[in-house]
Amino acid sequence: MDYRSRRTMPAHRRVSSTLSVSSRDSDPPGPAVPTNITVSIRLKPGGPSPLSSPSQAQVQAGPVWPTTATTIAVPDVGVFSFDNVFGAATTSPEVFAVVAKPVVNAVIEGYHGTIFAYGMTGTGKTYSMRGLANAPGIIPLAVADIFGQVSFATTNISVSYLEIYNEHVKDLLNPAVAADSLKLYDSPDGLVRIRNLRCVRVATMQELNDLITQGDLARRTEGTEYNAVSSRSHAILQIFLEKSEPLTRATSTTVLSLCDLAGSERAATDIERRKEGAYINRSLLALGTIIARLSAAPATAAAATTTTTTTTDGSRGGTSSNGGGSHDHIPYRDSKLTRILQHSLSGGALVSVLCTIDTHNPAKQALGETINTLRFAARAKNVAITPARAIVTASAAAGSAAANAVIESLRLDLERERAETEILKAELAEVRKQAYERKIREQENYDREKRELELQRDALKDRVTQLTRLILGGGGGGGGGSDKLRPTTINTELDRYKTRVEELERKLAHSQISTSSLSSPLSSSASSSTDLLLHQKLHSAEAEIKELREYLADKDRMINVLKRASSLGPTTTRTTTPGPDPAEYALRPLHGSTINRHAENPAAAAHGDTTPLANPKLRRSVK
Ligand SMILES: Nc1ncnc2c1ncn2[C@@H]1O[C@H](COP(=O)(O)OP(=O)(O)OP(=O)(O)O)[C@@H](O)[C@H]1O
Image 1 (cartoon, helix red, strand yellow):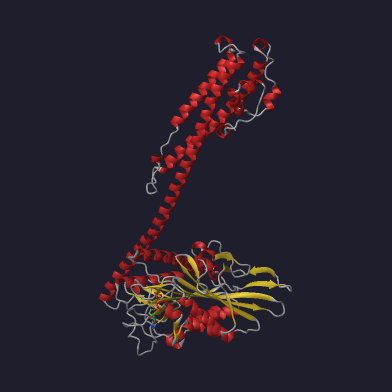
Image 2 (spheres, protein in one colour; image 1 turned 90 degrees about the horizontal axis):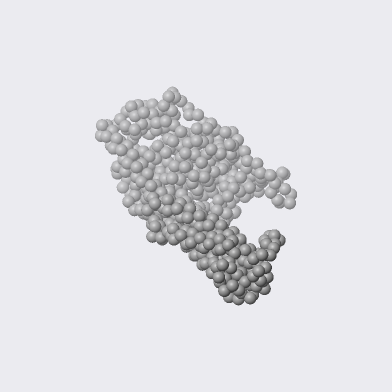
């Protein structure tokens, strides 16, 4: 099928126009370059109350702005050119025939297809997609069309229905399932699917319509200034057609995605609504960017179908996808909306965007929003707006109203930026809170390290005392503690030992960092320098501990030598001690605990008793 030549305007849509329109500034007017993207505008009928079934009698005289079948002229702004512009009198079946029918056909024939409804709240997106009981919209008409065309002998139909609210997915067919468990993944059939999302196989049209109605009831709606039941989420209904070839047993899955996007309005006073609006706009921005990029590329002839070969034992074989092409640079992951629709927004798929506007809404803000919708549509179609001078303005009053609308539109842009800034602020506050908590944890670590350092210092002090006792009591050979009897080398060692303890004391005193120096989560400026200081001090304390441990090991060896010397008697000690055994130096473990025991019981030391000391604190500090 060549779906690129599908757009034949119905007779009622062909209205004459005197306005000059073109797809680009520099191009002469002429047929648009065919692409896979169709962009249409639908004008909402005027009137104070919603119209349940539009007819010529109900519809007001017409739009405020001049339109043709493909253009809409906004005084002082420019002429917007699209594939279709549907006036207020156009019925939903007529819209379906032009906007949706070619996409449905393409999906049945083996392409992915997506239809979007986009526009300000209250302009008729849901009306266009779902319609009313007596005026069915695109979704029920598409369902009927599919069931009228496909053969159940070769095709399975299944459906999923979800909404995206503040970037969280909700399963509309299973609202109880936790949003966290709905994880997006690249499925082997080439589609982006959602783990734990209910996907129901249906056998009849009634079954499918019942599921859609069930999903509609679960949708999130809030009252807005323009719509008492405004949809504040994007709703995506996906109908999967799994076709199997009876001979080869190869299967192919194509998907029709029908998306009712959340209202695009930007201004809101309520914080929650503003945040909501910022999320909505962020995803719409991502969508607009992707569609615009696809629009810039010429139509590809390749079908978007992903074919999966099923072997005779039912296991999946190789998967080949010819619809995606190389589109690594397209930012599908910028939002859940674009990620879920990734394969349907690829070069080989068919996309139809229906933008709804209400030109009768007198509010300045609504005028600005309408212009923004037209801008989105123009961007999606990748067309330039013909400069305003080409427009025959209706009246000076209309001109100044439009100028005000442009100002309003810019003001709304600013408000959108503000709303997004609020999201960023909330995220920043969260980051600061986490940084503060991390700092508290680091302070606790530091305190712990400090306590350990103090224990080591105490242990060293003990050692000095014990060493002194040992030397005076055992090492001196019963000389009653006389200085004359102490070997000079041991005196020197003892002095050095004491010096180290003093040094350690000084270091500990110096490295005190008070908890009060920690900054609060809201004042971030000083935090990084405090962090740095803290880290430096901890590192130097660690190095100091390491050094002390080595020093301690030396002392242990020295004490062992002394013990052995003292067991040989005073004269022998001074004159014939053969010196430390190198093997003992290399193999004996540290016996910090042994020293303490020996201090309490020099006799045990004299007999080389190395039973570990029961004091766990000390044992830990010198291990
Ligand atoms: N073309 C139309 N003909 C008749 N009535 C319409 C048309 N478009 C919209 N309406 C009516 O206008 C009201 C608002 O429309 P709808 O709920 O479809 O807006 P929406 O764009 O989906 O809003 P939101 O984004 O807030 O959900 C509804 O009562 C609907 O029936």
